[in-house]
Image (cartoon, rainbow, N blue to C red; front, top):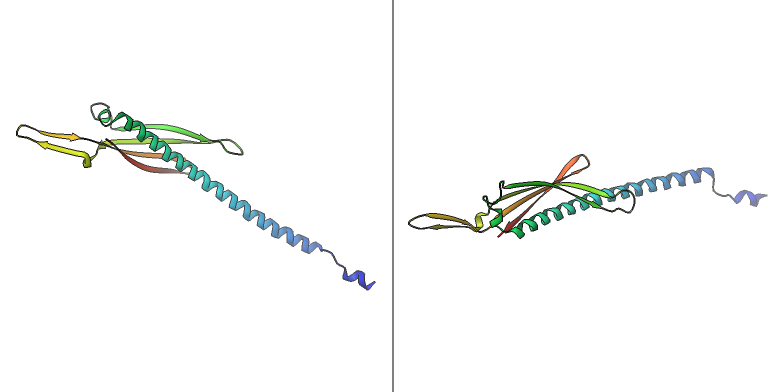
Length: 151
């Protein structure tokens, strides 16, 4: 009879304490996973914005500096929206709508002035493209500035 009293199993208190500890660990892992997901979505949206800005600069640079002069286009500011979407493993695809604003200006580092007895000529050999891409993220608006030169 004395031997049966020494053979104890897990009591209800030990089981409840282990369930509470495992619950806290699961909540910490879930919080970590949600934080990683938010960072991943923010980085994916920012990388998409850089890609949109680079595509805009590449498209305008194919036209050349002469096509971007004040005589060739009406406004020196171009605005448009571009949407991008990415598949996700679970749920609906991620879609971001980017607002793009491109300001075209003469680049002073490529400005040559020729002076003669009859006239003064300014030749612009390059155009500066300042691209601002903005997109909504949660309750704020994120944006990047990207710059390029078209010669």
